[in-house]
Image (cartoon, rainbow, N blue to C red; front, side, top):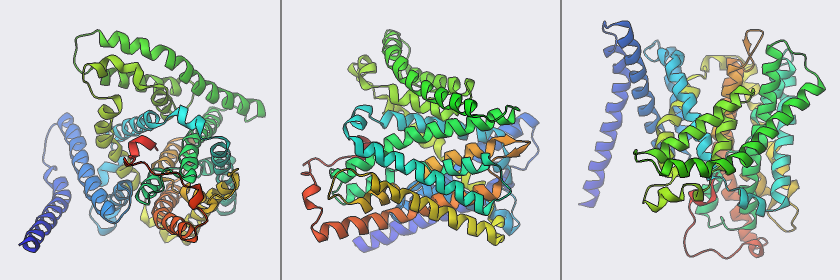
Length: 468
């Protein structure tokens, strides 16, 4: 009876998936009727959201069942949507070029970085010690240098701005998938895991500083400003001062803002206030020439639960719980759109495939240097290096910003280069789980790492507790 029930469930699931795929292809044709211009534009945005969200959830479900993060499914299904034109079906082409959809995707990634900031704990980051700082710093310097070298070899005609931005895309680490693997293996409380998770937070901050510096230099150069040591130092100082000031001033002023908001009688004020701070800091970042995600991250990391204590006392949800549904709605728009921006036709050029392979190798090798930064003796350095490999959404965000920055009317990250970066992100994210499992199990079987593991808590840890 249970077997029959299982078959029925599978049949229903396959029927729903098939119906969704048919709808994906049929909707553009159904929307081609004659309507007024304003209604047509609005209808296109709604249609694009329907297609993107269906693709994101179908892709996420498939890849989660394969033991991979949902973001990879969103990327891959985005690639499919963006390249069905190769099969002479052009119903999805409008999605790639719709400005309203692009703006929604930018809002989604801004909220995503705000969430990452909310889940980051500065106090815990300070406690993990010097090893996390050294690991993170080496994990930024080495990939940046290797990325610059690969760009120099494969893109000899490119400017130093292009090489610098490609190096920057290799710096970031998306450690969410690493945390999940360590959680499954019961290794999340080990010294190595603490170093990786602490280094990931520091890595985010350092990576955002590098992004701010590189994008600031490119923006200045596109405006005709000369590239000088003084200009670079000024941009570095500006990025660091913005982040530090946001943390100091924000932590001082945000309690007053939430206290004032808590006295008002209007509904949904906690979410509205939090979004106001997020978008406000993102806007300030753009005013001084930095990427908006830098401001959103700063806004998230400066907030603490004590700031909205009065809302919590009334039984309201936390800011993180309120923001997550918005991220779940808009962030997939960004990742599907990034996948749709990949043009598989560019890989007909063998040199682009070689560039993607070299970039992936540089991304992997660059993070293995992280193991050299572990100051304690007897730890599993290989697992620490492997745990820092996945680039995930952060690398995509960097590449997307590069594709929007222009010098002399040409994007810093060309479509072919962007496609190579996406391939690097997909490969590094997919190889990490099996490689990390192999390394950890091998270490535990050898018995050499047992003394370095702390006693496991009776209550399982959650990804929300460890952050990203």
